[in-house]
Image 1 (cartoon, chains in turn orange, yellow):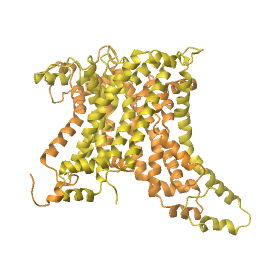
Image 2: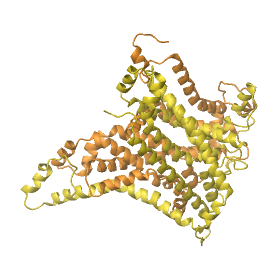
Image 3: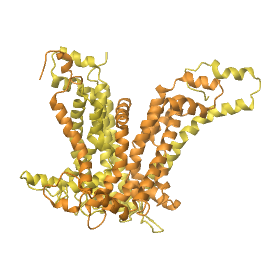
Length: 285
Length: 330
């Protein structure tokens, strides 16, 4: 459907008014995005009998709470939830704090070796820390930390990505004049950071906080290695739920639904900011 | 000299120092503060990286030279024997082939779909943000939850996918037992999670392209497709390379999806004949199921070298592209 009116603007690829087909394709993608979540809830709200039917029912049944209750009986799910909240919360706080501090130093303070150190940080972005799990595991065992939450928290206190991200934002967001004025007033460096820099970089810090929280909440390999079944995070508990000779899918998918709800709530509330953050990072990076 | 960066009028904070003949304690403290603070602020990263990044990487290299069983007290130094064994280890080559196969099956369609989605999302949609959030939804999902859900959907007997295939008159596929089928299923899992995320990154790059370029091409008589090929795509190249590099690093380390896809839950075999065991899964199996830490460390180092090599190739590719811009800015 082409109208002559506004023909030029319309045919510019990234500016055109979309056709119906565009909405249809996007709707298919969004439905595809949501479907596995819905399926998981569907199975969780029924019993395993549903899975043997060729064409399964597409409306939820009434067993969700019963299945959810069984999750809490099978694995220490409350403990796992609390652990995940503690780990993700701590990691998010420290990552944002340390990354903002380092970002402030790299963006606004001059010191010997600054450029070299910053290049080093960028290079470490390419080092897959996952590959160091064996010595890290040995070290954690020696320290007696294996099985304890600090084994998951300490390695994630601050990330190269966080420092890089905060530095990029601080460069533009904090004017030198403001820092200088604060120094004339006799502010210490840490006060300048806290009262001048931090308020100015809050948007970037908020985005970093969301990403860090989501990443930490969903982390699997390292917690699986270093924690045990008695003291798991949510992800480890889910995996334990599934391990066994017979997989009780209503039970397991009730677990995945429970584990997904907190992150979905975060996502629904903050989706707009998360999208903006990803796109902003893409242009800057 | 440690001072606040450039652009600062020299009269500023130093004026005070000149007027007082002897530096007071306060002044000394303040100068010390300026000098030392930056190092304190960047220190946490370097401490953490040193402990959990650099040290493990080097120590992994050290461990890889031993026959090192977890729990045993005296590991034997065996030099490069672990690496020699690795070269002749069919299971390792199988895992590497699987990793590359799954990586290609996921990243190639994923990037094509991401570009397409970005083009659709770039048009002036009603409720644009809503669509973007919807597309990004899988990114928030827990990998473990998704692994379990997809393993269920692709189940050989009662899985929904096979149910649908049979309903429309096709033969069911044994997604877990067949090598290619399992790779496809795992790749679909990866794509489901990352396509929307990559689409947003490509979209951001598309929106950074100046409107004038499109309008100029349009006046020269270029149609939609021509403009896409000759204007949009060349300018997207750096972003696409970024997306390719990140998905390479992630793809080569793929672990959670194949671990959870197994018909025997909790197994690290990657299927009954290792048909979808990846390198990281084999590493995990060697270290934490067979307790062969030396051998697993050798696997880790070989994987690390492969990742670095591919990252370097991508880096040179990127810098070559950067020197030959398709459309010159002014």
